[in-house]
Image (cartoon, rainbow, N blue to C red; front, top):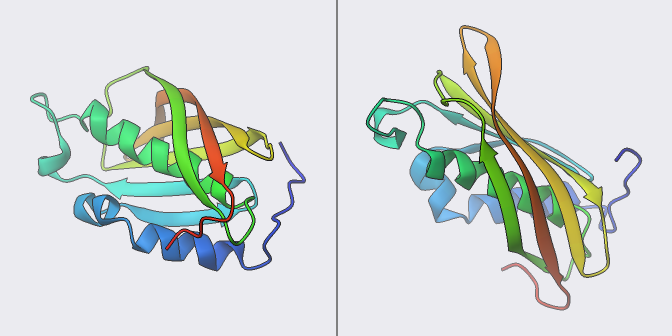
Length: 149
């Protein structure tokens, strides 16, 4: 959905600050690389510790960064005094996540006062070629008057 407007003109700084406080993202080495109103991208470089037995990125790790991308896409549209939580998601793993990096992206498709719906994808990048490895749909809740601190 194009043309989305952030309610908080400092949304990007607020999103980056929240992302920086996520110990789980720091633990796995994820980086917030793009934030726009209603859109977020997170990159994760390959590390052996993030793989399953076949040396592909683990499905839980792939889903983890996809969930955070959706959360921050939604959060970018929330008021400054609100926070975000995931309500539910449906993630389909479409191919082995083999590559040098994962890129998860999410776009708000239906903003709402309380619930926001996001379209989510993750791509594995190998030798400059992107492969779609995850497609999902996620619902997030805006917790009004509960600052994300």
